[in-house]
Length: 87
Image 1 (cartoon, rainbow, N blue to C red):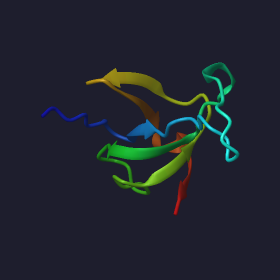
Image 2: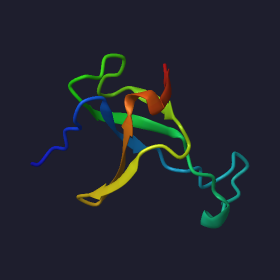
Image 3: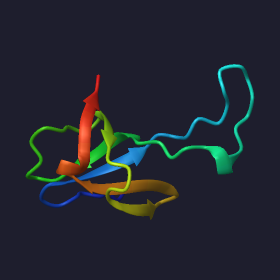
């Protein structure tokens, strides 16, 4: 199995899925769904100090580079683009 290891202060994150259904059961069309800014940390670079694999984070809206690999979508962001950790 191949793994992706970001370099330096970069972080590999996997965005959470957009909400597809309201709490009352109505389906939201894909064109009306907002892009989530919450993600799971998949891998961290060697210089990253404040994040760990498995953390759930909120990141800047337009940050990073999108990456599709092995059928999954990821984003590579700089550590500074991660706004906070959700606990």
